[in-house]
Image (cartoon, rainbow over all chains, first blue to last red; front, side, top):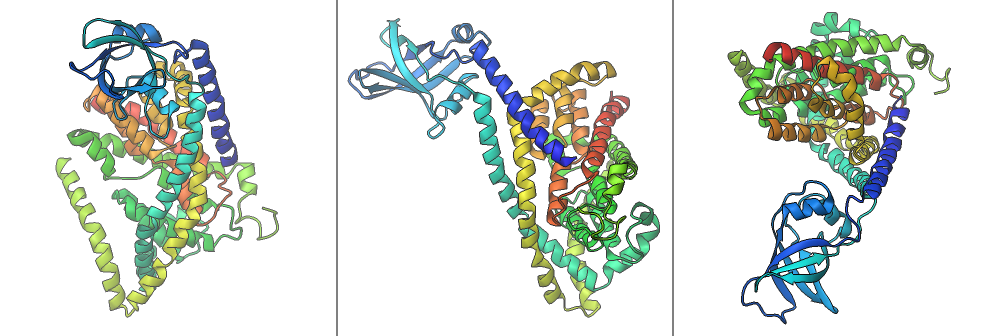
Length: 327
Length: 180
C-alpha cells in the first residue's frame, strides 16, 4: 500500500507542477519580456556620475495590478540604480519584502544572492527627484518544477537533521528503559496491565516485556510527553520485532501499536497547539479529547478489520512459519 | 474542567523527573548496576536514529514535493463540492489533508488560519481540533518502522489514515455541536 501512496505522491507532484507551470505560461502570469512600470524617488542633490545610487521604488498598486492583470500590493520598496555597461540597472534591495508575483520572480531569478534586477529605461521625469522608468526583468518559467526539485533536495537534508537530532533523546530513554527492564519494573507493569491490553495484542506471549513497553508508550502519549513517547514506542517495536519471524514485514501487533499512536491518544494537548491557540485552548480541551478518543477506537477497529482482508492475512508473518512464504 | 487541566499540566511536569530519577533509584534498590545498564541501553540510540534516516528521507521528500507542487489546491477544489454540502467549511479542508502528511506544515496552516480568522472563530477551532486530535501518520510510520527496519508496512498506513480521517470528520461535528 505504502508503495502506491509513495509513488502516487511523487507522480502527482510532478503532474500538478507541470499543469501549474503550463497554466502560468498560458496566462503569462509573470509578464515575461514586458517591462514593469516603476516610479523612482531619488534623493535630491545626488551625484549623476555615481556608480551606485540608492533609490526608493514607489510601487503604484494600480499600475502594477494593471500590468500583471491581478491585484498586486503597492508600497515603497528600497532599491539601487547601478551604472552598468551602456545603461542603468535597477536592483531591488536584497531583503525588501516584494509583493507577489515579484517575490516568486525574485526567488527564481537569482537563487544565490536573492535579488531581483533588470535594465531600466527612463520614460519621463516628473520632477528633479522623481523618475518614471520601465524595468525589464529576467523571464520566469516553470516555477513549480523548480520548487518541487528544491523541496525534494531540501527535505532530504531536513530528514537527516531531524533523525540525528533525535539521537540524544532516544539514547536517554533507551538507557532508562534498559534499567527498567533489568530491575523488573517492566514486568510489574506487564502484570498489572495485561488483562486490559492482551485482547488488543493477542500475539504477545504472556509475561513478555513488549506489552509493558507498549503501555509506557501509550501513557507517555496520553500525557503529551512526545519526547519520551517516541523512544518508548521504538523500544516497544524492537521488543515486538524479537517475536517476528520475518524481520522486514510488520506483524499485526506492530500495526496495532502504530494505529494507536497515529490516533494520538492524548489528554494533555500538544505544546505547540497550546502556544498557537493561547487561552482558547481551554475551550478545545473536550472537543479534542472526544475526537482523539473516538479516532483511537476507529484506529483499533480499522487495524483489526483490515487484518482480516485476504492480502493482509496472507502476508501476516506470524501466520506462516518462518521461511515458508517468500517475503 | 479548568482544575482538571491544571492537575494534568502539573502531572505532566512531574512525570518526566519522576521517571528519570525513579528508574535509576529503583534499579539501585534492586541491585542492578544502573550506570552500566544505562550506558549499554543508550548505546543503541545512535544506531536507531541512523536506521530511521532512509525511511524519513523517503517520506519527507515525497511529501515536500507534493506540497510544493500546488497539488493541495487541486485537491481542495476537488473535495469542496463533496464536503461543503456535508457542513464542512472549505477553509479547513487543507488542514484535513495536510495533517497526516506533515506536522510542521499543518502547524503553519493553523497559524495562517489564526492570522486570517482569529482564535475564537469556528474555523480555527475546528482546524485546531483536527490538529490536536491526530498525529502525522507518515512520520510515525517512518520513525517507528524505520527504527526496526520494517519495509513491508502491510495495513499500517490504511489503518492510520482511517483513524486520521475519522478524527478530521469528527472534529467538524464535535466542535459545531459543543462550541458552535
